[in-house]
Length: 189
Image (cartoon, rainbow, N blue to C red; front, side, top):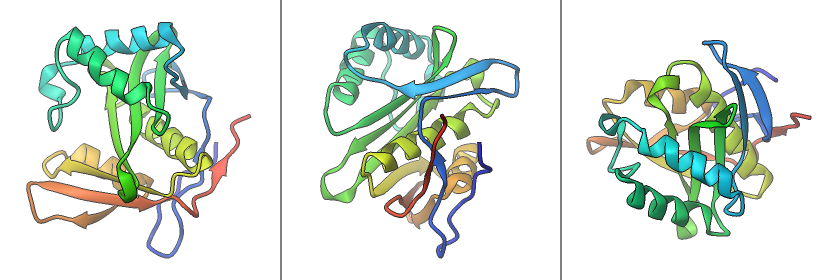
């Protein structure tokens, strides 16, 4: 995999890998990342299990929801639509991370990413977000934005590392954005 580069205002971000891809995380887990589709019932069920076991104290801005029925409803809106994009990180048959691009009308796509608490700090988040951006770029996504609580320094550092830039810092949340239109994608074989 090519070393990641971040946009500096003059250079587009990327190149981003297009899933599926595999890697060993910092803890030695063999992780694979692949797109998630509504028709993949077993994959959706594994993702529900991940979110049901997700530490509620690690929720951000009210997501992921708590409780199995709310998790199912939330995932249904993310996965059943034709306009969004989802990738999941797997350790064997266990979902350990999920990233999504949700269409937001003319404003582009909103990004959200979650890594199960047992797998945080192992490099999965970086690889997962880069794979999602590659998947989005390959499918014509041009603009991606997100909000992050300004105290979440690890998340802010991750977003900056992959090329997001702060666009609004006037509230307790930072708004960050990236233009993917010119981003390169890299084949993962």
